[in-house]
Image (cartoon, rainbow, N blue to C red; front, side, top):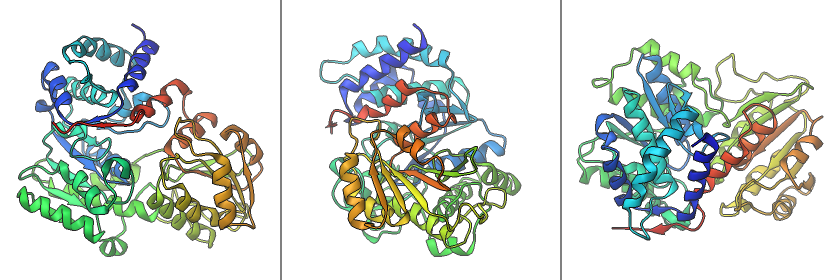
Length: 449
């Protein structure tokens, strides 16, 4: 087997959709020798900020001299991004080997209970991290928490970043229902840290933590504003994620001590592409890439850009990463390139993002679930009739048409940001691998047993 064949095998697992439940993952892990029992985890759930918080935790513990596994999703370009050790992507040869080892085990499952893409990848990651003798694994949920495949582990700490409306078709229509799914990662006696501030959601988390006798630490936004961290990631919302990561490190100091200077070094050097990532074109124009994929993410992006356009630097960066006002960017017209998935609340996202721009290109996302660019354009036109708005046929076309613009913001979906990174030559081309993010299609089947 060669690497493209291994990727095709994983791609074919999409046929089994997403079956929420833990039985398959437990069974597959047993066949792999229960590698999760040889590892320590920090388990991270939440609506927004999971990836950034995971990246901060990984950077802090790696700066502290630990060998750290990182499991996240979706990937921006390469599937290998999902499984990393000390921020080195898993090798193509290891993926081939793991696929070859796991494939025979799938025959043990009866018809109708075939492991899904995410279940297989979860066990691949566990097996790899155990082989690599990781001191700690930063372990991000895929979707939800309670019935997510990642929930077969017992972590050192459970983290819930925040609770917002997203994936309602699978997690519930209210913040309380969504919180109950996310809080399903809470384990008996295991500390919980959250930055959730929505009252209904927080009440659910508090109740489940009490029932599980799990000590709960709550991060307040008001406290974060007065104590900002030196952080390489831009945006005030990242300060809240940093405060959350710092609280986790503090809770675990007795088990995994990290010196104060190493914590600072970790935050100052953390790298997480596609989240307020600034790119400078040869022309001197700027491109800001942000994977805001729901209303809460769009609001965070809007807040950062509004501050910048008012003559401020993008909030939250350290001096080496701050965007100082220049003659060609702040104050100049903003061009927005927007692509969103159809199953997101794209109308409210347009309401949030359209007022930012003088020019708007709506584009399709490279996904079967892409929203129609013409419908996005019409929604933006209603909110910002003064803007020049064009429905483009492809992201590449929109990039060409905006080549001379001072500031271009590409946003609306991590899938779109991944395509942009590829087109801009900032990540190796791996178009076939971006398609692996479509593992939730067809519609998930809920397995409660």
